Figure 1 (tube, rainbow, N blue to C red):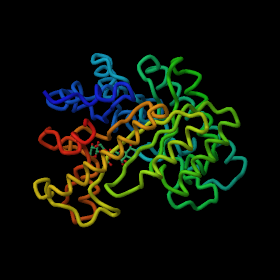
Figure 2 (cartoon, rainbow, N blue to C red):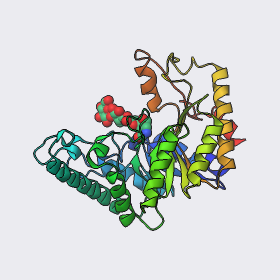
Figure 3 (spheres, helix red, strand yellow):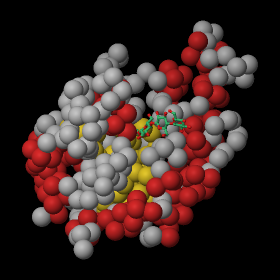
Figure 4 (tube, rainbow, N blue to C red):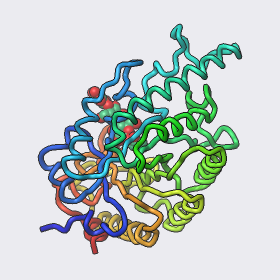
Length: 348
Ligand code: G3I
């Protein structure tokens, strides 16, 4: 008899969750069916899982998520075609097994660039063709902007960038566009998109790419945020900025950590977290969803980076910074699958 979250927002945007294939049965699946109308793979669709060796594609885990989405009539987001993390090393090795980034000879560097762009094209084409009828939104490239930019444009100096400049982004979008379904939308996804200077660097990059005719439909705002950060005004400005370029916005990886950065000190267990912290988190969720509703003509979906507080990457973070012991609780459902104050904050 708990109200359905996705129904509450059906006139505004989709409500999604990130899932592992192991969560497609039992209690997690029941939560998905009740509260969400969209899903995304937390890990199963990343390059390291999809193409662990060159030419050996592994779709088994990804297929399970596609099947679940279809059977339950849910939208599917694809995360992610290109990223600097969770990508196998072979992408960046030349034909002799040498690291492309170490190459000094300009002619060989040019060859390496061609080879890497060819690999981008092959990966994107193979995946997009397979799922073109299933996926509504694609994260084409993820996290292209640096937090502490070494270069003035703020671009992340990943191997992708060091070897191809921004051409990997162009090739990825153009290839995805060529093979995706007619109604599919292509996103550039990143975190801390609310704050300066990162959001302006992202804005400038997208503006440049659009001017060159690169087919970008929208910005994915990961929204790995905290109770007190970033501000609502920064969040509003960011959505409006990208909408000003004629782009859609999606909130793609929402979680509201109880902690600042770094997450230290952390509560050791869920039971230890005081009521007033859950209350503060509920207030935060309230202001956030009020904003999303205010901007709902500019936001097509809001996806949480998990389902309940029993499974969140933030626990790894809490442990990492607290000698191996720590618990975060970023969602609107507790580890017992029960609603938290944050749930009622975004329902009422
Ligand atoms: O699959 C292996 C398993 O075989 C092995 O035994 C185990 C031991 O550590 O590791 C498992 O891999 C882990 C993987 O998650 C699957 O559980 C990796 O160590 C772990 O690093 C990986 O973490 C993921 C992280 O991306 C990697 O950067 C998180 O689950 C995932 O939530 C997180 O998601 C990212 C988004 O893709 C992009 N935006 C940020 C977000 C949070 O970091």
